[in-house]
Amino acid sequence: MSLLVLDWSSKTLKPVWISEGISQMENRKIVFFDGVCNLCTGSVQWILKRNKKKDLYFSQIGGDTYNLIQKDIPENFPTIDSILYYNGNVILVESEAILTLSKSLDFPYSLLTYLVVIPKFIRDFFYRFVAKHRYRWFGRSEFCLLPNEETNSRFLP
View: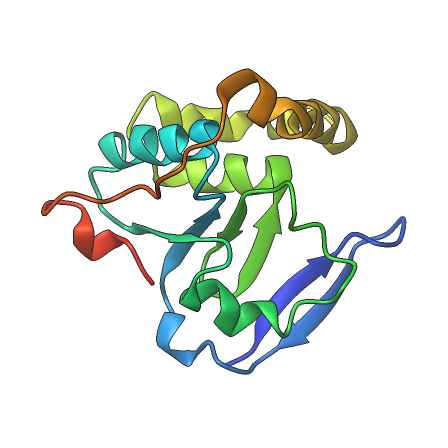
């Protein structure tokens, strides 16, 4: 299996194929998030409540699952201030990640997908603005998010 990573370092999107360490994640939709960011962990809890299909999995950036693919992601890939969404064959970041994962949310939240009509540079400008200020506005947590028994199976190491 190969994984398509879209490289945003140039003005045009270039596919970058990677293949190591990801076979066990095939056919999984995984949201990678900042585990110490209160906004991020709050968003994960919000998503868990609105994903009745239970087809979304979660892993912290820096965790074992993330590290399986991180070594193959190009250095200039924008991962530091971003949510990452892996949907079985592609990794998306920033507003693309949010809009694509919203397809897995219950109605009416799945309608967020249609915000794709807003140009990407505008969506990403606002995404980056919030990402830059997230610790100041929402704070950091000293502790990682601990899933309960019901959601534990949806969290990957």
